[in-house]
Length: 241
Image (tube, rainbow, N blue to C red; front, side):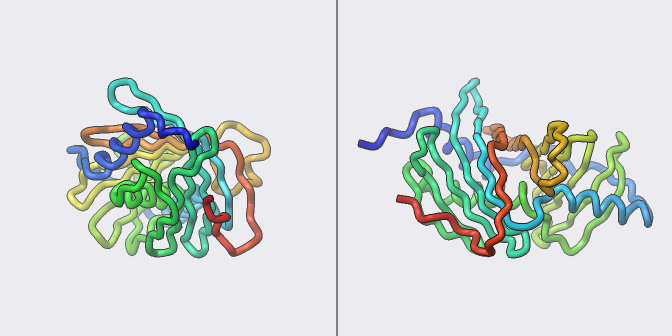
């Protein structure tokens, strides 16, 4: 007999769905443009923040929800930076698969167990994965500094959204997603521990914190358990049972 999905996890799904619809009132900060060659160096640094190649990543997922509620899951992401495609598998801590979906320009859900069988949940999760692991598909990129001196790569998307990628500290990157009305929707903090072997894992980081702004807000903390470089172009995992 399959174990029921824990109540905190069900609440997590509800907040993920509602958070995808909510926005914050924070506006787009002013950017003071920089010139070449500094701009070229900044742009290369921003692009290097993303994984390059084919990877299989295993993370623990901790969701911090309103009311001091916390939920725990496991996630496997198998991605190809060249194809901009990936597979996302979400499991309970016992290994029961509750969500399994592919993205290759469109979303294909192969498995979704209630309450993960919501279309808004699938769209939100897949959009967050793209925001975390893939370089923004932007026609226009501007580099500059904010009022506090932080260097930023600003990406202007076709739908009017804006993605800022910055490195406020040596071992930390930050990605901010602003909607078409320049309201702040997502803040992603990428943290690397001082690891002597980290240079061999291009763009792979130790900890990812995703904060959804608005009401209700929530925070997801992804801790890296394992990162495997894949030689195969096949970016799919075995089908869920």
